[in-house]
Length: 84
Image 1 (spheres, one colour):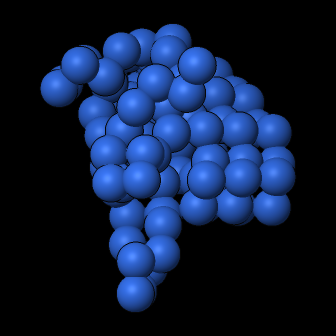
Image 2 (cartoon, helix red, strand yellow):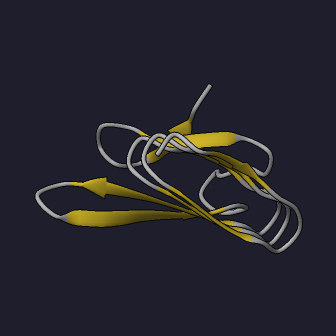
């Protein structure tokens, strides 16, 4: 809960709700509800949220406008948007 985690190349980070995670290239970042994630090239971003049951939104850096080195969160429609 409210963790601030960072790491380098190819890592896997998991934080609870309201966490801030930053990873290097080829990382997998998983945050809980209301988390903010920043990944390097070819990283995978996952944010869990509650919508009558627990679900996971997934985005891939380099696809669908998701950029390396940019912080993302989920909007009210559970879509990835820039956190800034």
